[in-house]
Length: 374
Image (tube, rainbow, N blue to C red; front, side, top):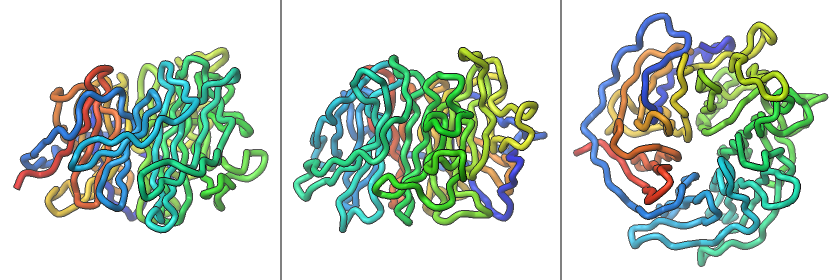
């Protein structure tokens, strides 16, 4: 349960994970009813597909960690471009992807990636995608996000709201000082406009004006509500250390991650002893981690009681978990595709209700589509 309650709003979280865990629930949540599902493999032979986003024409953009941006259509896969200067090592590479809500008029997309240069960093770049599906007009809108040379804890998922505000969830670069450092962009949730300028409502001085929240370890997924509820804008998915993967509400404040130097991870994910006012997780995995990843929200009447759930890809435990959160309490859980496709990285809920997800098994990775069976 979050210390700052999500009152008056009912949400369901869908998580692609193995192992049931609900950090602070007093009783086991009820089992959710999962309808019969139809699963289709849309693409295979891929190399660590990491980000998914749909264009207005119904084609699916996706990134692969080693730098390739491609488009998936009913006719197959078409490479758009190889993003230059991508440093693909360890957990780093071509990462988050977002399509501008005004794409039909401005043609803009956004990608995040580790940069191949002497001083490691993560960068967010805005591109124009032309009518011929070629990249043009590259603009680096956020630079200097600290990164580890080997890519550890690169994080960096993207989500853009209808208001044109770009949300950026960063990793802490496995550096103890970063999550609580008000000037560092690592271990933070950032909010900027299309040009990389700070969005209204971020933290005040001494924080960098692009910072919305801090004390994060390694953000893996972001999902925005259609509109904020009681100051909560959505949810993020975050990797824990040896325990406590988390789903956190998107609201300003300190989320309590502060490893002791040089990088002692035996501290709590949300350290309430050191930070009594830290924001507690909406859900946590408990004593063992499952490696949560991308995050989205199911929609459509075909999903029945699962309409409105969030979906998070799960890497280590290799399945889809459904989690319902009502008024800040986890009230229902279930699993999808448990053990069928290996590690799940990206998830994306399309406007027609279909759930897309990608695998991250290291060879012959796939993109799949799941819908309730008719």
